[in-house]
Image 1: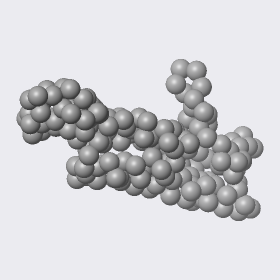
Image 2: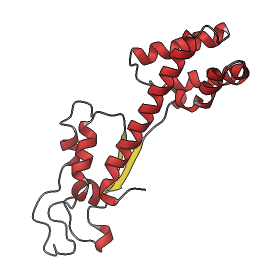
Image 3: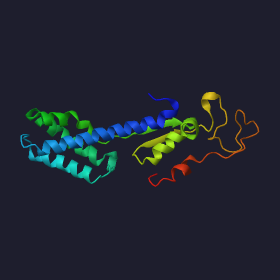
Image 4: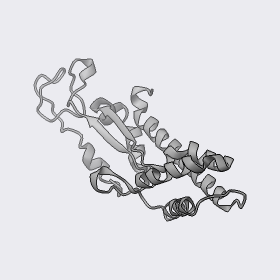
Length: 185
């Protein structure tokens, strides 16, 4: 769990931890393929080499029809082969133990508008600027819901809310426009 204002950084940390694990998997695949003592089928060798090529070329995980991804399809083909051959060498068992890292994993950072527009905006901006592959969902109620409906930076101009009975005098912060200043959004 994360503190309310640390939500974005927590999600970014999870993404980077995944990246470290995926990098570790890549080094283990390289080591396994180079080790002449590891007896491996041609089919498994080709799939592992294909994985390395995709990683070396930094190929992003493309979604295919029906929401499937290239990495996920590769994992579906690798898993039974690794399961079948894992008893042949400890390195193959290691790859089998790391099999979940071959597939596609989505990272979602979810928070309310009070977090995204206000107390956690600095962290959110940091995550967006990092260019890491994360998804962000802001649940926008256009007010501070946890304080009984106070006007916030997410409240549109003219809207009536607690402490803004005459209507909010300033415009709603344009979070999407701020995010789009980064080239990867």
